[in-house]
Image (cartoon, rainbow, N blue to C red; front, side, top):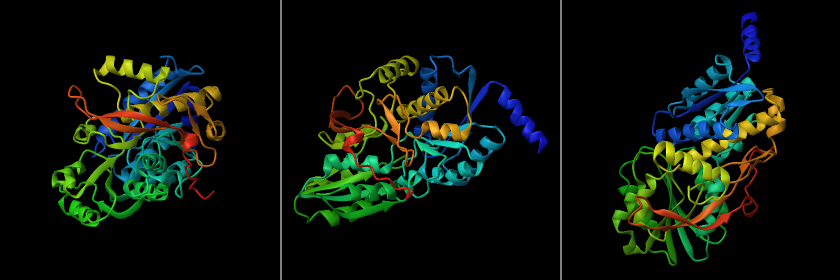
Amino acid sequence: MVMACAAVAVHAQSGEIRIAHVYDKTGPLEAYAKQTHVGLMMGLEYATGGTMTVAGKRLVVIEKDSQFKPDVGAKELAAAYADDKADIAIGPTGSGVALAMLPVAEEYRKILLVEPAVADSITGDKWNRYIFRTGRNSSQDAISNAVALDKPGTVIATLAQDYAFGRDGVKAFKEAIKHAKVVHEEYLPTNTTDFTAGAQRLIDRLKDQPGRKVIWILWAGGGGNPFKIADLDLQRYGIEIATGGNILPAMVAYKQFPGMEGATYYYYDIPKNPVNQWLVSEHQKRFNAPPDFFTAGGMAAGMAVVEALKRTQGDTNTNKLIATMAGMTFDTPKGPMTFRKEDHQAMQSMYHFRIKVDPNVAWGIPELVREIKPSDMNVPIRNQR
């Protein structure tokens, strides 16, 4: 016990602030994870003016691989807090992993800033006071997508993955729909590659319905491609496909659907502000590519941490950080976000888009229809506090 206390004391005097990034570096969400880490490091850099210090203390980032496995995520987070003496942790990528990590943050009484895991339950019934989230939640996704699709005479069937992300997302989407009618929910395993049987059930449920018929797809990760269902000649039945935003490689499939509408968390060409301008130009310079969906999220997380630490003058006391962050507004590539006091969910803009096809661009381009501001979305508080 004396040795443990001594180790903490040495760390406290070392002039370091230790940030653990526990994320799914390997597994089906690897592409998302990589973007998040790049964005996190760029966010810390931008917010500290390139010094990587706050109040004279050096920021040290410790990487941990949660492997898209809930038990591994919980174990790595515990190790980050206990062994690596992390003052604050960020991550993970997958919602199932995040849900396993929430009690660990509570046990160690340290902040876990969730980015980018989406399930509503993270800031809902599984939430505790140590949890903050810069990533959008299922309700924000759902409400913004409902803006694009919720019209009288529209009939919708949903296709989603059978885990927390998919089920919470569809539940929130159904709650957000006020005028259209959801007639079927199809859930398939996360690693599905053959969508034929699921697609047939969707077609059978929609084909004889009157009015506009839409399959709304909610899918994450680099496994199978759910947009392959378009090969089953949906147009013969007058069925359209709709979905939200995604990473650029996934949006290559969107080129098949010019005019498709939905809502997205981020697309590099949409937000017009100095932070995003810096991110786009620096990312292009360093990686010869524009920043992607999760790069912006990682940057938002980094900027939130630095803003909080600046306000506490580098003090990493957890209670002081919680008091500082609850209700805090901070800059991001998407513009200002605010951690809602009740559940620490970041209130943020979403973007209603329509897909435009340009033969010179590899992916379907989400052209802005309108910015959906936090004040336009009645995002439910689900933590029953």
